[in-house]
Length: 519
Image (cartoon, rainbow, N blue to C red):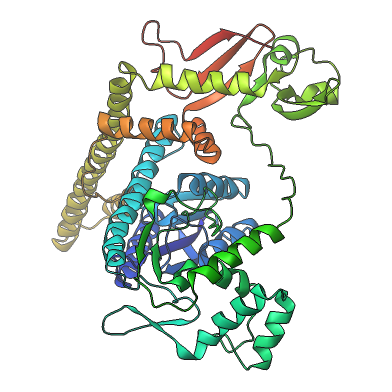
């Protein structure tokens, strides 16, 4: 059965050219031709970063995966799909649920546990490259900022940029917007009144639309109007890829230069407006964060396995108990609600999650295990490459032998020795040659030798993992756990943690670790 394929290409626009899309698509087409796949749809995102999932063609591709449009998504390299490990895991899971598999032309990966670990290392290195590139770009931007020059994007309302010096100038056509907003606000007028006044005076946004209410807080909170050049004030994107202009960076990270901007509003008026804004603000509403479980999809009930022979999942559960209605977040066997047969008590989330994190650090990322893990990953990759090369050599030799036999028969026929046996032999050889050529076409063409995974690479990933735990970066921690933990089986008296690779217990070679349960 011919497999249908969707091909995906992307270039970020930072240091790449649009021609790189053509190179990616050529490699994908050659790969599909060798595999006998048919490309039914091509998706291309131009000048789009893979650190974000806000890519139109990427989202169209994910949507199409649920419509039985193709069997595989093929990319030139995994970093074309995503350089964010959380997004990569999230969307690959979506593809899996839709029955679609992600393949890479240059990364030779399969469904084995070793490939899963190797893939996580490749994704980690791609994300490191992206973050390092952003850091280098930020260095250049800061140098521009220290000269009080425009660093990109639209200048604030009331300013324009000198095309030669790249420094800010007052835009006389927009200056009145800023002055009217501040004067009316300080005089006690509300946003609706200010917007109407600006419309009556004929002011418009740079897109030709009336000034909106949403623009007024941006104007009133912009200290640049007092003559202070400010750069790197707001925080970068969060784990979900969203920006929040209200989330400010620490003072030492912000560049502030007095006199770096032309003055439109006096400092007295600006700070009076800030005090008024503060007094106008009501008490913030309570915010209840959605519960996230690090081990969702990994926890199973050991008691049901022991008593019923069935492995039931344990899911997150929230309950309130006691006189003060204290909240308890636990993992609870799903069979308790379905059949009432399970007697396994619920286990507090903080106990089991902290234990699994501790076991990862103790069993996987320790000074003894890291060299073994590195060797295992490199040996696995080398053995796959060697096996592929050996099979290619064997088939090529067989094909050469058949070709020589065919040439001998052709020569015999030309010399007048034609008979039915020779013709029958000729047909058999042609069938064998066609079969071998098909097998050769299924072998991935040789690619440049990959750099070996080093202990330093894994140690860097470990260091980042520890930082993510300290920062409580839940999506990243969850992705990391999923790369190394196969399952967590919870019994009444103990917990078994099963890892994906057999390198965790260096003394007796066991795959799991066990601890008494604290309930």
